[in-house]
Amino acid sequence: MTENQQDKRVEKDNEWSLYMIKTRLNTLYTGISTNVERRFKEHSGGSKRAARYLKGKGPLELVWQQTVGSKSQALVLEGQIKKLNRRQKLSLIEGGIVLKSLLD
Image (cartoon, rainbow, N blue to C red; front, side, top):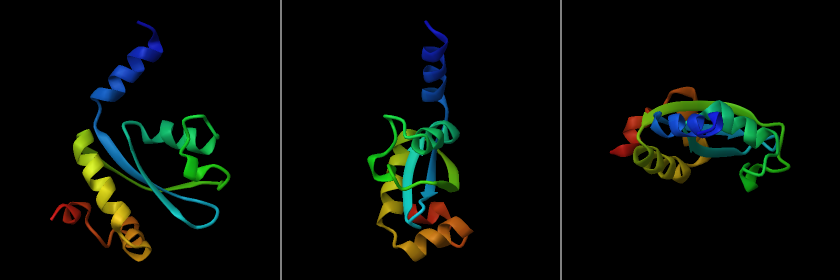
């Protein structure tokens, strides 16, 4: 097994995190990853793995991240965050909304 394959296996075992990125156009993008730093670099660098939505909207700024646990929890919370309006998302970033309250 190559080192890269070992790194991917370790990432799969790690806890999942949610993150939000602000674009040059002041829009917010929400995603999940086991390695937010790596994922942000993919988005920022125009990698083939970058989100289509973010292409051409740089410079990007990572404005929020939160570890949540399992992939299933991350996916549920990502869906809840994507349903929030901009004001609510900004409140989450600033700490006005507690992430766990989105599960209620």
